[in-house]
Amino acid sequence: MFDRPSSNERAVLVHIDLPAEKDQEDISELKELASTAGAETCAVVTGSRRAPDARFFVGKGKLEEIKLIVEAEEAGLVLFNHALSPSQERNIEKELCVRVVDRTGLILDIFAQRAQTHVGKLQVELAQLRHLSTRLIRGWTHLERQKGGIGMRGPGETQLETDRRLLSNRIRLIKQRLAKVEKQREQGRGARKRSETFSVSLVGYTNA
Image (tube, rainbow, N blue to C red; front, side, top):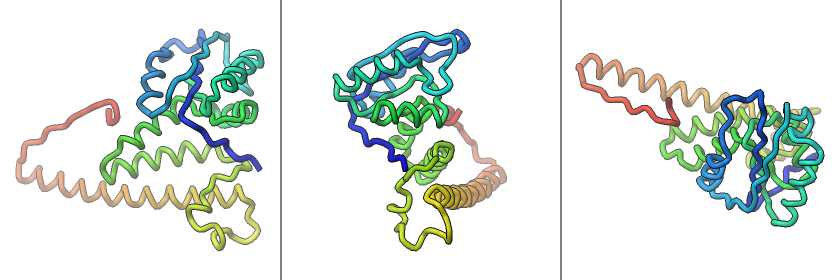
């Protein structure tokens, strides 16, 4: 069973130049995202590769460099300026023994912090759960602890099967709630259209 390491807010940032990725985000934006999420950047690791390593995204030498910096800086978090596969994220965490978050996970965390409305919180939670569902493997995701644990597991279920079932149930519930909200909004739009009420729409980074 694999427990994800807990983390403090001191973060090591990792950015690798990849020729195949023409529109890579630069490291300065990752620093801003990390700060917005509440992390303190204590070190930045850069490098270049022709292509990501299938197992660790970075090479073994670079991974060892990151590990030494994490230990020296007493960091509890490593932020990658890239999208990691679930297996890459797990493999890196096992090697570094600290929490690893990719760019997608970091942005979702920021959205979760900034969401104010009930609908916004539901939408962010749905995105986070979908992201998490691809990363479940023989791991204790602590969902049972939140939901009560004992009595929640079906006959013959493994921990992984229980986690996936709980995630699936929560995702289905959120979708139902969002569908209900959308129906109410559609009715409201119809009423405004019939009354010829003037409407203004604001489009920004989070809803474009």
